[in-house]
Image 1 (cartoon, helix red, strand yellow):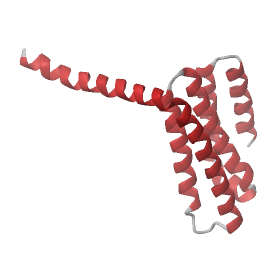
Image 2 (cartoon, rainbow, N blue to C red; image 1 turned 45 degrees about the vertical axis):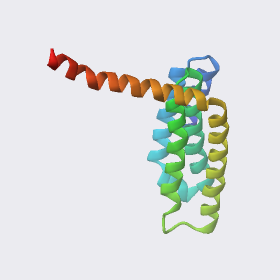
Image 3 (cartoon, rainbow, N blue to C red; image 1 turned 90 degrees about the horizontal axis):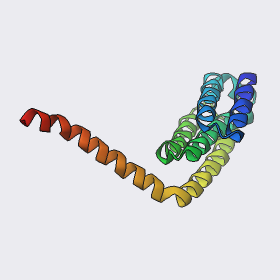
Image 4 (cartoon, helix red, strand yellow; image 1 turned 120 degrees about the horizontal axis):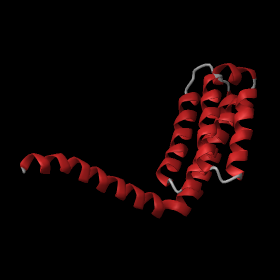
Length: 147
């Protein structure tokens, strides 16, 4: 947990300094640390382990949003929900742990909804641009072969 805390503090400082790409990188490192130690941390202190993962996902989403990369930000909310869904189905989980995960999932869904309301047009525009670029890239070799 100490490594996660150190990396998260560094990421927050980078974000405050408008070094959003660095903040993404540091938050991703923090998330990997939280995921690596999750099982051990979860059974020792479930609330801290779940909070660390959730905070990392949300921080990454916020940093991507600051960069204007709305698709990647949206993906982080999705990843956070998927992460929690994978945990909640564990057979050895007690009711208190399940309730904790449900509360966290509700919070993430709320944040995701706020993000979606604010940036849905941006996500759609970026998705459309990516699909056009992909279509162009796919058709390019075919056009070259014909000539």
